[in-house]
Image 1 (cartoon, rainbow, N blue to C red):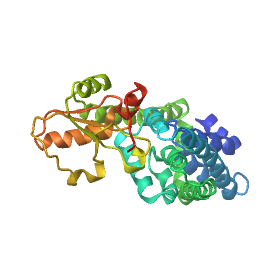
Image 2: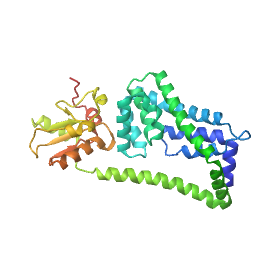
Image 3: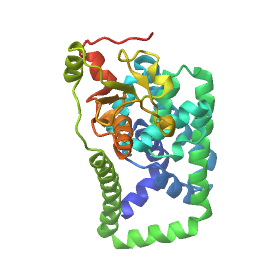
Amino acid sequence: MGYIADLIEQYGLVIVFINVLLEQLGLPIPAYPTLVISGALISPEKFSFSVLLLTAIFAAVIADTFWYFTGRKYGTKVMGKLCKISLSPDTCVSQSQSLYLKIGSPALLVCKFIPGFASISSALAGSTGTKLITFLIMDGLGAALWAGSALWLGSLFSTAIDDLMNILVEMGKWGTLLVLFALIAFVASKWWERKRFIKDLRMARISVDELNTLLANGETPIILDTRAPHLIQDGWIPGAQFASLEALDQLVLEMNDNDPVVLYCSCPNEITAAKIAKALMARGYYNVKPLTGGIDAWRDAGYEVTNT
């Protein structure tokens, strides 16, 4: 543990830069604790608050700009990739997406305080056409608030943090193992939370081929597009009705209880469609199935999409 403490003191700026960069790129390596510890080490001989802050801001903006241009190039498709690498539950991702769509670029001021939101919000900024200069200003300010709060907390509780570091140093290799165990436990808890959440939404699905066969045979299942309004601009399945998660309480279906209902979205694990399907089943509609792969799978299979 003494070796790690020496590394932080000697290469603190490099460690802060790499840690922040990797976390903002989406890896489950929390940077906030590193910033807090760095804040506790602030002194004229070791680190300057302003230099540490600028280092963290620079690293965050680099990573966020990467996701901004990725979102601009690939649009909503990148959201699925981000959800797959994120350890945060899909509900957190969908709520983060809703927040950005509601308030726009000001969401960048708080996105780094919400797990899984930083990369999502940056990609959304690109896909929704937020101007680059607006993105850079808001993202830079958000990074300053996030990193600055951690450094301030570190300096405020520097004595307690120093005592903790000293205890870990005295523990030697056991202190190092304790820190590693804490990191592993954090990642494992996030993974388990996500797995349990997905399991709770497990239900029968319908494939895009099965839905296409139904339509080709003249059957008319009720098709619900559950995406947010921003996400439907690139087209939808012909005949679909729109029923976003935010408008779920107002959703009324004129149908018999056992009429087939197919729901789709554009998120991994059909999370939004599954949540609405669960709500409909609770109301007494039992023949309800999310579309496996959502609109992306439908489009990739070459089936018809309309925007009129």
